[in-house]
View 1 (cartoon, helix red, strand yellow):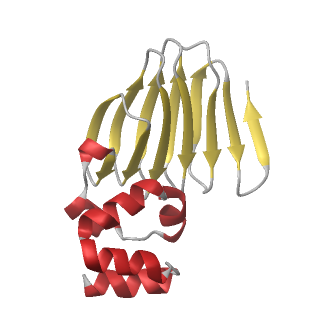
View 2 (tube, rainbow, N blue to C red):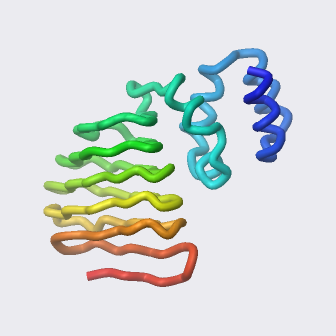
Length: 163
């Protein structure tokens, strides 16, 4: 835990959250990560080996694994993962993808999906729904799509791609 604390301080995490981790342990760190994935992914904190040891698939946290997910949660965070995600029905889902993940995401029915893609991660979106899928790309990874109504916003370079 001391090593994680040192890295948290280096990443700029506030003392309040560091104290909570020391008091409540790793489950509190996982909860913080799930509540703030954008902050954590931008800083690559905690590192993927820590995430893999303490991943919690029940909460939507996946790390260093092959996935085949039928999305039924509000939020998913995937690091160093490969595989497929299916979102259907009337689900509203946000998917955070990082640490060089490679994912095929299929959207069906009336589902609404937002994807935040970091570093060199790659996503391929198949949108068969009537709703627009929005991809926010923060790294140099590749985002490709099939179907209609996909908007890709390149946050690093200000470009917007859509069909």
